[in-house]
Amino acid sequence: MAGLDPNDDFEAREITRIRQDIIASSLDGDYLPVLEHLKHSAPKVRATVLKVLDNEGKLEKETIETALMDSAFDVRYALAYLISSNLEIPAMNFLRDDDPSIVEVACWGVGERGDASAEILETLQSITESHEDALCRESAVAALGALGDEKALGSILKAVDDIATVRRRAVLALSPFDGPEVDSAIVKALEDRDWQVRQAAEDISR
Image (cartoon, helix red, strand yellow):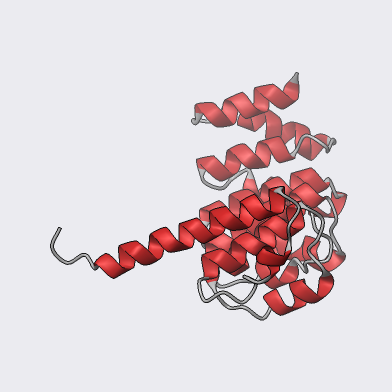
């Protein structure tokens, strides 16, 4: 096809091969080849190394600190994803990222990890209430529900009036809470114009 550079295709295949080799080496318990690619020129390779090391419990603090200085999207996204299981990765770095994709996965990671400082909780509330990207608001309100902190209830209740996808997540996020405001929000959601929001309300009402 006109306009395609054969070198680009070769480079992409080479990167895929290296990533597969990294995974294969880790499965064999051979981490020297894995570590050798920590400074590879391709961000996708560096990101794969981080994921493999974390999966095997070998992602050391020094390696994380070095990776935190890496501005490549793939590396930042990998670290944001790993927040879900690695307490050494500072969530705030990624909750405040300029890229909504990274903010979204960082919110998910915090919810999965279940560990939130006051600063993280406040940031999740801010994202829930005012982030311009709906996927970020959706992910943030889901995280607030997973954390179940009473201080976040106000933000969750506000999200019940957001767009349909966020409303659905917000209704589900009410599950750990109770009280008149929660009951009122659920009753309102049971009559929502969006069927998924109504279904979510029915699910937590059972």
